Length: 329
Image: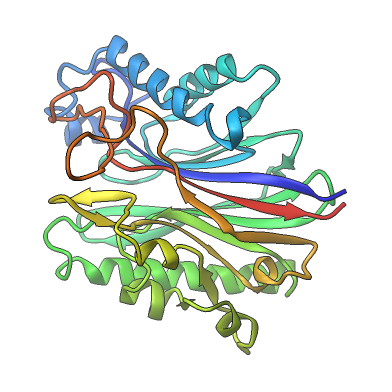
Protein backbone atom coordinates (compact mmCIF):
# COMPACT_ATOMS: atom_id res chain seq x y z
CA UNK A 1 0.00 0.00 0.00
CA UNK A 2 1.22 3.54 -0.74
CA UNK A 3 2.34 5.62 2.23
CA UNK A 4 1.89 9.35 2.66
CA UNK A 5 4.80 11.41 4.00
CA UNK A 6 3.78 14.73 5.52
CA UNK A 7 6.43 17.36 4.82
CA UNK A 8 6.52 20.82 6.42
CA UNK A 9 8.71 23.90 6.45
CA UNK A 10 8.89 26.71 9.01
CA UNK A 11 11.04 29.78 9.56
CA UNK A 12 11.16 29.76 13.37
CA UNK A 13 12.07 33.45 13.78
CA UNK A 14 15.27 33.58 15.78
CA UNK A 15 15.18 30.43 17.88
CA UNK A 16 18.28 31.50 19.80
CA UNK A 17 20.07 30.11 22.80
CA UNK A 18 20.10 32.11 26.04
CA UNK A 19 22.01 35.36 26.41
CA UNK A 20 24.77 33.71 28.47
CA UNK A 21 25.15 30.57 26.39
CA UNK A 22 28.57 28.92 26.92
CA UNK A 23 31.29 29.29 24.27
CA UNK A 24 30.75 25.67 23.26
CA UNK A 25 27.30 26.71 21.98
CA UNK A 26 28.03 30.22 20.66
CA UNK A 27 31.20 31.40 18.97
CA UNK A 28 32.88 34.69 19.76
CA UNK A 29 32.14 35.82 16.21
CA UNK A 30 28.40 35.28 16.60
CA UNK A 31 28.42 36.86 20.06
CA UNK A 32 29.95 40.02 18.58
CA UNK A 33 27.26 40.12 15.90
CA UNK A 34 24.23 39.60 18.14
CA UNK A 35 25.48 40.68 21.58
CA UNK A 36 23.23 43.74 21.84
CA UNK A 37 20.13 42.04 20.44
CA UNK A 38 20.41 38.94 22.63
CA UNK A 39 20.43 40.99 25.87
CA UNK A 40 17.63 39.88 28.18
CA UNK A 41 17.01 36.60 26.33
CA UNK A 42 16.74 34.33 29.36
CA UNK A 43 16.62 30.51 29.51
CA UNK A 44 12.96 30.88 30.46
CA UNK A 45 12.16 32.89 27.32
CA UNK A 46 14.14 30.47 25.15
CA UNK A 47 12.30 27.50 26.60
CA UNK A 48 8.92 29.22 26.32
CA UNK A 49 9.54 29.92 22.63
CA UNK A 50 10.47 26.26 22.05
CA UNK A 51 7.25 25.22 23.78
CA UNK A 52 5.17 27.56 21.64
CA UNK A 53 6.76 26.32 18.42
CA UNK A 54 6.36 22.68 19.47
CA UNK A 55 2.68 23.22 20.21
CA UNK A 56 2.18 24.14 16.54
CA UNK A 57 4.40 21.42 15.07
CA UNK A 58 2.54 18.78 17.09
CA UNK A 59 -0.74 19.86 15.45
CA UNK A 60 0.57 19.29 11.93
CA UNK A 61 -0.56 16.27 9.94
CA UNK A 62 -3.81 15.92 11.84
CA UNK A 63 -2.04 15.88 15.19
CA UNK A 64 0.49 13.21 14.16
CA UNK A 65 3.27 15.73 13.52
CA UNK A 66 5.33 15.99 10.31
CA UNK A 67 7.35 13.08 8.97
CA UNK A 68 9.92 15.54 7.67
CA UNK A 69 10.29 19.13 8.85
CA UNK A 70 12.67 21.75 7.49
CA UNK A 71 13.39 24.78 9.67
CA UNK A 72 15.54 27.89 9.57
CA UNK A 73 16.64 30.65 11.94
CA UNK A 74 17.90 28.25 14.59
CA UNK A 75 21.13 29.10 16.38
CA UNK A 76 22.55 25.71 17.29
CA UNK A 77 21.91 22.04 17.89
CA UNK A 78 21.14 22.66 21.56
CA UNK A 79 17.97 24.64 20.79
CA UNK A 80 16.98 22.04 18.20
CA UNK A 81 17.26 19.33 20.85
CA UNK A 82 15.07 21.43 23.16
CA UNK A 83 12.52 21.77 20.37
CA UNK A 84 12.54 18.04 19.58
CA UNK A 85 12.03 17.17 23.26
CA UNK A 86 9.02 19.49 23.41
CA UNK A 87 7.53 18.02 20.22
CA UNK A 88 8.01 14.42 21.28
CA UNK A 89 6.43 15.15 24.68
CA UNK A 90 3.28 16.13 22.78
CA UNK A 91 3.26 13.25 20.27
CA UNK A 92 3.77 9.88 21.98
CA UNK A 93 5.50 7.42 19.69
CA UNK A 94 7.28 10.00 17.55
CA UNK A 95 11.06 10.08 17.55
CA UNK A 96 12.85 12.69 15.49
CA UNK A 97 16.43 12.72 14.26
CA UNK A 98 18.18 16.05 13.68
CA UNK A 99 20.23 16.90 10.60
CA UNK A 100 22.18 20.08 11.40
CA UNK A 101 25.61 21.66 11.43
CA UNK A 102 26.68 25.18 12.33
CA UNK A 103 27.00 27.45 9.30
CA UNK A 104 28.95 30.62 8.65
CA UNK A 105 25.97 32.97 8.66
CA UNK A 106 26.98 36.24 10.31
CA UNK A 107 24.13 36.05 12.85
CA UNK A 108 24.63 32.35 13.48
CA UNK A 109 21.24 31.26 12.14
CA UNK A 110 21.11 27.83 10.54
CA UNK A 111 18.94 25.57 8.42
CA UNK A 112 18.13 22.12 9.78
CA UNK A 113 15.88 19.11 9.29
CA UNK A 114 13.93 16.96 11.72
CA UNK A 115 12.89 13.58 10.35
CA UNK A 116 11.23 10.44 11.61
CA UNK A 117 13.78 7.63 11.59
CA UNK A 118 11.08 5.04 10.94
CA UNK A 119 10.41 6.78 7.61
CA UNK A 120 13.83 8.01 6.47
CA UNK A 121 17.49 7.23 6.86
CA UNK A 122 20.30 9.71 6.26
CA UNK A 123 23.64 8.13 5.30
CA UNK A 124 26.54 9.84 7.12
CA UNK A 125 28.12 11.17 3.92
CA UNK A 126 24.91 12.49 2.34
CA UNK A 127 24.56 15.92 3.98
CA UNK A 128 25.92 18.94 2.10
CA UNK A 129 26.15 22.67 2.78
CA UNK A 130 26.20 24.92 -0.28
CA UNK A 131 27.40 28.41 0.56
CA UNK A 132 25.71 31.47 -0.92
CA UNK A 133 28.19 34.33 -0.59
CA UNK A 134 27.65 38.03 -0.11
CA UNK A 135 30.02 40.72 1.11
CA UNK A 136 28.83 40.98 4.70
CA UNK A 137 27.31 37.55 5.39
CA UNK A 138 26.69 34.08 4.07
CA UNK A 139 23.65 31.87 3.83
CA UNK A 140 23.75 28.17 3.11
CA UNK A 141 21.49 25.80 1.23
CA UNK A 142 21.45 22.51 3.13
CA UNK A 143 21.02 19.33 1.11
CA UNK A 144 20.18 15.92 2.56
CA UNK A 145 19.98 12.83 0.39
CA UNK A 146 17.51 10.82 2.40
CA UNK A 147 16.82 7.15 1.83
CA UNK A 148 13.20 6.12 2.29
CA UNK A 149 12.70 3.13 4.56
CA UNK A 150 9.65 1.93 2.62
CA UNK A 151 11.19 1.69 -0.83
CA UNK A 152 14.90 2.31 -0.26
CA UNK A 153 14.72 5.27 -2.63
CA UNK A 154 17.15 8.19 -2.61
CA UNK A 155 15.26 11.46 -2.15
CA UNK A 156 17.21 14.73 -2.37
CA UNK A 157 15.77 17.48 -0.16
CA UNK A 158 17.12 21.05 -0.10
CA UNK A 159 16.47 23.43 2.80
CA UNK A 160 16.76 27.08 1.77
CA UNK A 161 17.08 30.35 3.65
CA UNK A 162 18.05 32.82 0.97
CA UNK A 163 19.66 36.24 1.62
CA UNK A 164 17.19 38.72 3.06
CA UNK A 165 15.76 41.87 1.53
CA UNK A 166 17.50 44.07 4.08
CA UNK A 167 18.90 47.14 2.37
CA UNK A 168 16.08 47.04 -0.16
CA UNK A 169 14.35 44.35 -2.20
CA UNK A 170 15.92 45.38 -5.50
CA UNK A 171 19.30 46.34 -4.06
CA UNK A 172 19.65 42.87 -2.49
CA UNK A 173 18.13 40.90 -5.38
CA UNK A 174 21.50 39.90 -6.84
CA UNK A 175 22.29 37.80 -3.78
CA UNK A 176 19.09 35.80 -4.23
CA UNK A 177 19.92 35.41 -7.92
CA UNK A 178 23.16 33.73 -6.80
CA UNK A 179 21.16 31.51 -4.43
CA UNK A 180 18.86 30.50 -7.29
CA UNK A 181 21.82 29.58 -9.47
CA UNK A 182 23.30 27.57 -6.60
CA UNK A 183 20.08 25.61 -6.11
CA UNK A 184 19.74 24.97 -9.84
CA UNK A 185 23.31 23.77 -10.12
CA UNK A 186 23.08 21.27 -7.28
CA UNK A 187 19.74 20.00 -8.55
CA UNK A 188 21.53 19.03 -11.73
CA UNK A 189 24.37 17.47 -9.71
CA UNK A 190 21.86 15.26 -7.89
CA UNK A 191 20.63 13.89 -11.21
CA UNK A 192 24.18 13.30 -12.39
CA UNK A 193 25.35 11.54 -9.23
CA UNK A 194 22.25 9.60 -8.17
CA UNK A 195 20.61 9.12 -11.55
CA UNK A 196 18.12 11.00 -13.73
CA UNK A 197 15.13 9.45 -11.93
CA UNK A 198 16.05 10.88 -8.52
CA UNK A 199 13.21 12.86 -6.89
CA UNK A 200 14.10 16.29 -5.55
CA UNK A 201 12.24 18.71 -3.28
CA UNK A 202 13.35 22.24 -2.43
CA UNK A 203 11.66 24.02 0.44
CA UNK A 204 12.45 27.14 2.35
CA UNK A 205 12.19 30.83 3.02
CA UNK A 206 13.38 32.18 -0.31
CA UNK A 207 12.88 35.86 0.60
CA UNK A 208 11.40 36.23 -2.88
CA UNK A 209 8.02 35.33 -4.33
CA UNK A 210 7.35 32.58 -6.91
CA UNK A 211 7.28 35.11 -9.75
CA UNK A 212 10.58 36.81 -8.88
CA UNK A 213 13.65 36.52 -11.12
CA UNK A 214 15.67 34.49 -8.61
CA UNK A 215 13.15 31.65 -8.72
CA UNK A 216 11.91 31.87 -12.31
CA UNK A 217 15.17 32.53 -14.16
CA UNK A 218 17.97 31.40 -11.87
CA UNK A 219 16.39 28.43 -10.07
CA UNK A 220 14.51 27.61 -13.31
CA UNK A 221 11.17 27.46 -11.55
CA UNK A 222 7.98 27.10 -13.60
CA UNK A 223 4.32 27.75 -12.88
CA UNK A 224 2.80 24.93 -14.98
CA UNK A 225 3.39 21.24 -14.42
CA UNK A 226 3.49 20.55 -18.17
CA UNK A 227 6.32 23.07 -18.62
CA UNK A 228 8.28 20.83 -16.27
CA UNK A 229 7.22 17.47 -17.68
CA UNK A 230 7.85 18.54 -21.30
CA UNK A 231 11.20 20.24 -20.64
CA UNK A 232 14.40 18.77 -22.04
CA UNK A 233 16.54 20.27 -19.27
CA UNK A 234 16.07 20.10 -15.47
CA UNK A 235 13.51 22.50 -14.08
CA UNK A 236 11.53 22.89 -10.87
CA UNK A 237 7.77 23.20 -10.53
CA UNK A 238 6.88 25.81 -7.91
CA UNK A 239 3.91 24.43 -5.99
CA UNK A 240 3.29 27.75 -4.23
CA UNK A 241 2.10 29.67 -7.29
CA UNK A 242 -1.61 29.12 -6.43
CA UNK A 243 -1.09 30.67 -3.00
CA UNK A 244 0.57 33.69 -4.61
CA UNK A 245 -2.69 34.34 -6.43
CA UNK A 246 -4.70 34.68 -3.22
CA UNK A 247 -4.87 37.38 -0.52
CA UNK A 248 -2.94 35.08 1.84
CA UNK A 249 0.77 34.97 2.59
CA UNK A 250 3.34 33.21 4.73
CA UNK A 251 4.95 36.50 5.83
CA UNK A 252 3.55 40.02 6.10
CA UNK A 253 5.51 43.22 5.51
CA UNK A 254 3.69 46.51 6.12
CA UNK A 255 0.49 44.43 6.32
CA UNK A 256 1.09 43.17 2.76
CA UNK A 257 1.08 39.37 2.35
CA UNK A 258 4.14 37.78 0.77
CA UNK A 259 4.57 34.14 -0.23
CA UNK A 260 8.23 33.77 0.73
CA UNK A 261 7.98 30.19 2.01
CA UNK A 262 7.58 27.71 -0.82
CA UNK A 263 7.88 24.14 -2.09
CA UNK A 264 9.47 23.32 -5.46
CA UNK A 265 9.78 19.83 -6.97
CA UNK A 266 11.50 18.29 -9.96
CA UNK A 267 10.00 16.11 -12.69
CA UNK A 268 10.45 12.95 -10.66
CA UNK A 269 8.16 14.19 -7.90
CA UNK A 270 5.72 15.92 -10.25
CA UNK A 271 4.89 12.94 -12.48
CA UNK A 272 1.80 11.06 -11.32
CA UNK A 273 3.39 7.81 -12.53
CA UNK A 274 6.47 8.21 -10.31
CA UNK A 275 6.84 5.77 -7.40
CA UNK A 276 7.32 8.78 -5.12
CA UNK A 277 5.25 11.81 -6.06
CA UNK A 278 3.94 15.03 -4.63
CA UNK A 279 0.25 15.79 -4.18
CA UNK A 280 0.13 19.46 -5.22
CA UNK A 281 -3.45 19.94 -4.07
CA UNK A 282 -2.31 19.38 -0.46
CA UNK A 283 -0.01 22.43 -0.28
CA UNK A 284 -1.24 24.63 2.54
CA UNK A 285 -0.33 27.52 4.76
CA UNK A 286 -0.74 26.24 8.31
CA UNK A 287 -2.68 28.46 10.69
CA UNK A 288 -3.79 26.88 13.93
CA UNK A 289 -5.82 28.66 16.64
CA UNK A 290 -3.91 31.50 18.25
CA UNK A 291 -1.34 31.85 15.48
CA UNK A 292 -3.08 34.62 13.55
CA UNK A 293 -3.34 38.26 14.61
CA UNK A 294 -6.79 39.73 15.09
CA UNK A 295 -7.82 42.72 13.02
CA UNK A 296 -7.91 43.47 9.33
CA UNK A 297 -4.66 41.71 8.41
CA UNK A 298 -4.36 37.96 9.15
CA UNK A 299 -0.63 37.99 9.76
CA UNK A 300 1.34 35.66 12.04
CA UNK A 301 1.71 36.40 15.75
CA UNK A 302 5.48 36.61 16.37
CA UNK A 303 7.18 35.66 19.59
CA UNK A 304 9.63 38.51 19.16
CA UNK A 305 12.93 38.99 20.93
CA UNK A 306 16.28 39.91 19.36
CA UNK A 307 15.55 43.59 19.96
CA UNK A 308 11.79 43.34 19.34
CA UNK A 309 9.08 43.23 22.03
CA UNK A 310 8.41 39.72 23.32
CA UNK A 311 4.95 38.15 23.25
CA UNK A 312 5.14 34.91 25.19
CA UNK A 313 1.90 33.78 23.55
CA UNK A 314 3.38 34.29 20.08
CA UNK A 315 5.14 31.88 17.75
CA UNK A 316 7.00 33.18 14.68
CA UNK A 317 6.75 35.98 12.15
CA UNK A 318 6.24 33.34 9.43
CA UNK A 319 3.47 30.81 8.99
CA UNK A 320 4.59 27.22 8.33
CA UNK A 321 3.64 25.41 5.14
CA UNK A 322 2.88 21.74 4.51
CA UNK A 323 2.50 19.24 1.67
CA UNK A 324 1.98 15.48 1.25
CA UNK A 325 4.30 13.23 -0.75
CA UNK A 326 3.07 9.71 -1.58
CA UNK A 327 5.41 6.73 -1.96
CA UNK A 328 4.57 3.31 -3.40
CA UNK A 329 5.70 0.19 -1.60
